[in-house]
Length: 300
Image 1: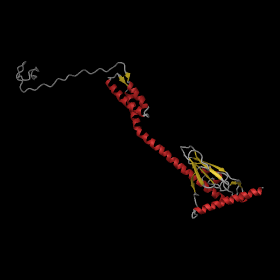
Image 2: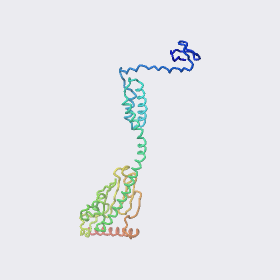
Image 3: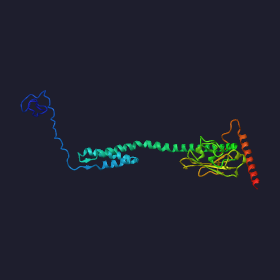
């Protein structure tokens, strides 16, 4: 027990102070003396940059690589701990902090990259499907335009796609019938290129000349629709000829021997049944062959 009068130490069970004789009963112990150490002198010697901080910064710059982001975070935390405990002997806290920020940014991008990896292929497939549907629709438009061209000018089928197109402000004629979109008449639309090839005998009737035709038509034709970049703007190629049958191929250009997509005339006139349209088409083909045969006989 500490005497409150002279601060002398006494036995715990003592009654009087052995030094001053003061009564110890009822006295309280003095509070412990707190010793204050002298403040540490700042380190002024040579300093060294933390290697872990440098590694954290380098790995952080490669944050787009997932393992590198994890390494940047680990090295950044370790280097900051070493710098705090070094007493000023290590530097590089700025590099460690930068590495940490980049590392956490790389980790936060992982969900975005996963979503993008799933969504982008689906969007690409949806775009290709839309382009393929547009290409089929364009072939049907060409087929309809060919029928209208022959009905209007009695010169067989058009010699090329340009004859079926035309600008909005121009007068429709045999050379520019304005029966379809100018972009389609130019040969490219919605990621597909359209190649028109006349395959039949040339037809140049007097009645067509009277209607302003300056070029011969044709008895038959074929149109090839191929994607501009296969696998990106479309996968399948398509084919149509004067029969109106659309065919397709997955691996390369479609031909008359390719698989059939559908065998019907689209864009039927209101109130006209499908069978009547087929009969009308067959009769027109027979008449065109008769006219062509008559021209050849006349030339002989």
